[in-house]
Image 1 (cartoon, rainbow, N blue to C red):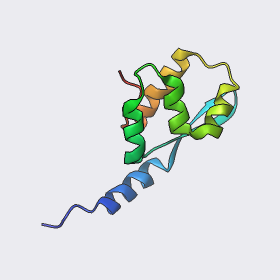
Image 2: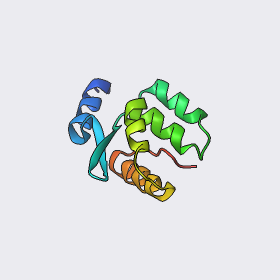
Image 3: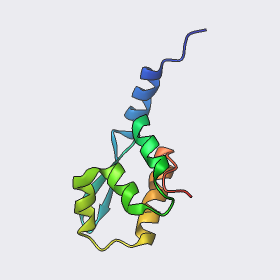
Length: 96
């Protein structure tokens, strides 16, 4: 039996999902990563369940997060974005 090839599995996931998961707000496109590095996962785990700003800043990077902050986005909008993101990528972020 052959060993599980992590690199091949990652390549398949990225081929199926792409490097980023994109969403649009007011005609502007934003991106979240389809894969979260293990080091970032530790930081995610340290965030409080209701820290949407911290979550988005970590996932989007400071530049993307600051662009998003220029828009009127509600808590419900963020919940919908994170729900769709989780469904499409299999990543359960923002769940408390």
